[in-house]
Length: 201
Image (cartoon, rainbow, N blue to C red; front, side):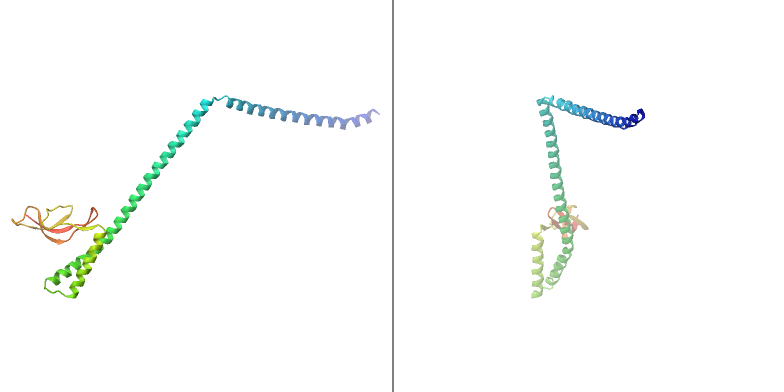
């Protein structure tokens, strides 16, 4: 009979041990949770201990920092906008300058055609037509801020004139331009083409 009782008691003991282990695990988990909750509570308590004045000071410092960054970004963008607009204007002027330089040769040839015809004292419809074309071309140039550089009778200036010949003549002043071989032109405030001139003395 004793052996039978022992056999029946063994499963009961095993069940009791399993239940004890489960209870121990629950207790450890509860202790961990409680310890985590207590740490969070302590952190919140420390945060709540920050004085309102200190919190306002921190927020003000952040606001000042953000404002400074915003103002810097605005200044950089404004500089970028001015720089790009200046570059665009420069590119446009360079393109116009290249086109005008090519058209100047056409104007030169029209001038030569008129001079050669006028030298023969011949006034006809063909010459009148050429003069009208030249006038129209000059008007277009004037509308684009292209102006002629004054030469004959002016003092020689290397910034605007290019001396290709020299003449000794006491009738003229020193470094005075006596003859213009090729007209010079200005585009706005820049020299488009220098005048090719003969200088006296």
